[in-house]
Structures are given as structure tokens and as C-alpha cells.
Image (cartoon, rainbow, N blue to C red; front, side, top):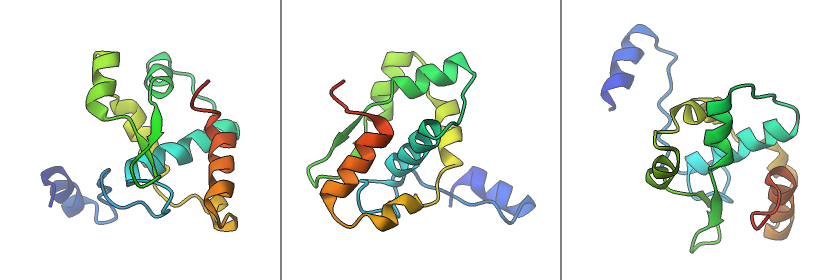
Length: 127
């Protein structure tokens, strides 16, 4: 058990540990980190306003790709740290607020529909 989590959990029993590398709720994502960031991107597309230049920089420099299993994955955090010259901690904290499964995917059954939806949320990755 994570040390910080154990301390927080003692004082606040409703605290949840969300390992970023854990399995995503939605099979379209390689891990929970990718799922949370995609859910965050959807919220931004639906009107979530971000008025913080450093957070905007963290989010706009985060890239995604498909892994060998055809699942969406984000660029490694170490690579993003090199680009930003700091850790994207604020973006990670915001992404954690979107850790629940994106219900919009429940209506989409095949990979083509899911990819079309992801592109509508995040735009074309080649742009």
C-alpha cells in the first residue's frame, strides 16, 4: 500500500488509491492514466474552461498513440517531463477527477465507432 495513501486513509477513509498504470475500466485504453486524460479531454471539449497557463501547457503537450494491442496510451511521463522541464503534476491531479469510466463509450460497440468518438473528443492526432 502506498505510504501517502495509508496516512490519508487513516484520517479520511473515503480516499481512493488510483494507480495510473492499473487496468482501465474501458478496454479502449492501455491503462487508467490514458482513460482519465481522455475523459478530461472530453470535459474540455464539452466546455470545461481551464484558466491556468501552466496547466494548459501540461495538457497541450501531452500526446497519445496506439500501443501494440491497438489501445490508446499517453506518451511516457518521463518524456513529458523533458518537454516541460517539470512534472505535469497539476494535469495529473485534474485528470484524477475524471477517473470514473466515460459513460459515452457504453453506446459504442466496435473499434471504429470508438476511434471516431475519440477523434471527435481529442481531434486527429496527426494535426
